[in-house]
Length: 199
Image (cartoon, rainbow, N blue to C red):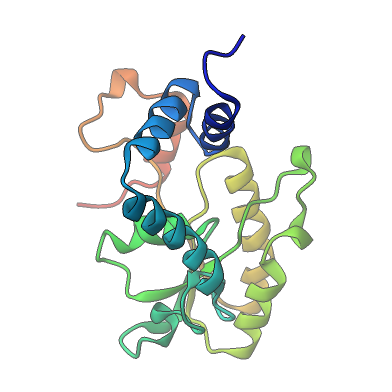
């Protein structure tokens, strides 16, 4: 039995469709939206509609942007011979926050996952290979997530790209700063050992 009117229930259900939003949070968000003034509500709605209308995929790297090419691909300050391959657009944001990477990106929009029916042809691998063939690339950095799917995708890409005579590297995965060894799982510790460097 529902305690709310059908229109409120529908609003709550809409918020529940968002990632990581449970029923309690969805209910809070729904009532927060109902408490907003009409202008704030209209601004919120129009920002979603405008984003959906104006955003597009960059035809070079498949980042989401208002422009094509995206600002990163269009920047003369970026090293176009260095490509960092990521699974998702959100991964670019994470990498850019470091202010360390000066190359460009390629977004796969997923990872190889046979269990989910996602093969190499379902993500932007062909587009990456075309990009490599058409440009002078010095290094490909594989920054896929340290999950089974991400590791499988990195291995698959490495096997495709290395024969082209291009340096292929993988970002190191290991113990987070502030973490304790005793609470670190075996896979993370193994990756930390593999990614060790001389100091």
